[in-house]
Image (tube, rainbow, N blue to C red; front, side, top):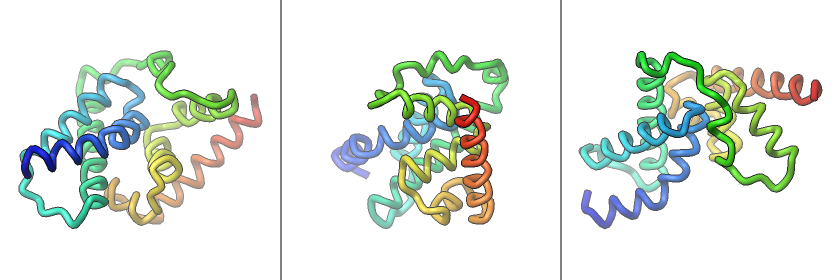
Length: 156
């Protein structure tokens, strides 16, 4: 991959990959590390890609795997404050901010599918490929995440 192509891909997909990984990690620093590692692996890979969408899915999958690796490491076993995420996204109104905060309180496996489905626009089948789980598992996680969000939003 030449330098111009790499820069085009990085400029086009870095924000989407970062947002996807941030939904997984809940921590800016770990998300940035995972994204950096994913783009480094892109630079070093000899994988043949079938278009830009293939590259995007590959980057998100690699970054999510990097995120899991960081999350499993000893230094990430502590509690991470949600306050670190303040100011991460600009919201038009308070209800969107409340929804984001509730999504971020979900377990990681639910946050990831919610982000990929609603914010990145992937289908359940595509999410299954990215996360390397069955499509039925994606559908179940979406259903359970929606249920939890509904309950939490009613409480407030």
